[in-house]
Length: 313
Length: 97
Image (cartoon, rainbow over all chains, first blue to last red; front, top):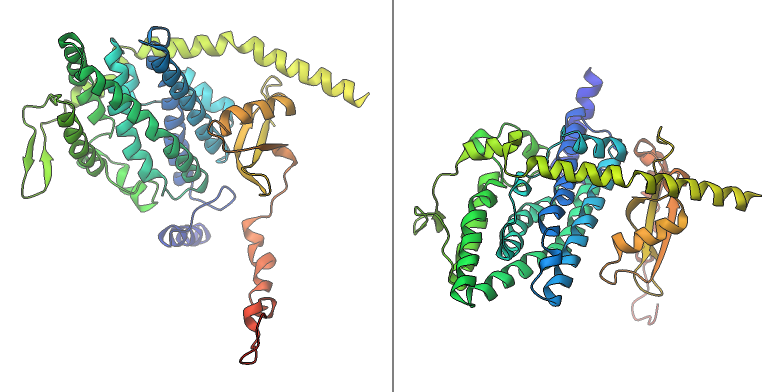
């Protein structure tokens, strides 16, 4: 028992000294579990996040937008794979991680349980959803677990185009016909609050946060990140002449931040609990893709085995 | 490895970003065989001209040192500063040394 305590002190000393923790290092069970949960949730979010956007590939308004959207969705698949690899370094098999998503045991970001109803939603998703994700991901580039931090650096390099292409879509629509403007405003209206919810419960109601901060898995609190996102995004909305749908939104001279209205946490909890507009559809789509691909995985292994045998002979 | 024989094995990926530089570990992926591992690595790790050559190695083929052995392996180098050029005192005025 004293030995574990000693190991834990050594571990914390490393973390405090900003030394990265690597897969073969001793780590507390809770740290490992916490990371497996967080990184796999993050990976699942990248993968499920392809679905609402994939919905618009065949209906993108022109070839330029279509090529961009395809590239962005391919990036999301890549990001999922970087993260799944990071989870594997913690001793969990890929199969188990994927199974937990398919069975509904593991969570993914609730934002992807909202539907993409119009083309402007693709703009709003890139601008707001990727924008919010970037805030979180930039922080995670400095997370204490080496493989997670390295995956994040790679992701952040690629992510910035995602946000910019989304904002560009919104900017073009807002300069278009009245109907296009209205479409852009409507998308902002529907995606604003769910995007703010992406940062998670407020600090007072986030029980795991303190431990995650101590282990330097997280480096900034949910509310801090959310505030920075609001401050930046409100300015961007002003530039393209769109209105953030929060009547209580107001610049606060003394804090030098925007004050905003209360988030509807009942809605958040409902969607997390599985009752969002698209929860069932998303899981069904992932399960179908996995099942439909089973024969490909089997055939590839059979072919590899046959080839290996031939080579040995 | 995995219990299910249909699960693709894990490969470690190394990318050479430019001719003349070394191959650097970038991450891992699953693939049925080496050829597929290279093709997948191309899609996963070089979408933005990050590489011009790829190595893939079965993860099971890699042996690694243990953190517990770090002291035994690396501490002996601590007191051998004479292995560095700055250890030596050069006479004033000598050039190109």
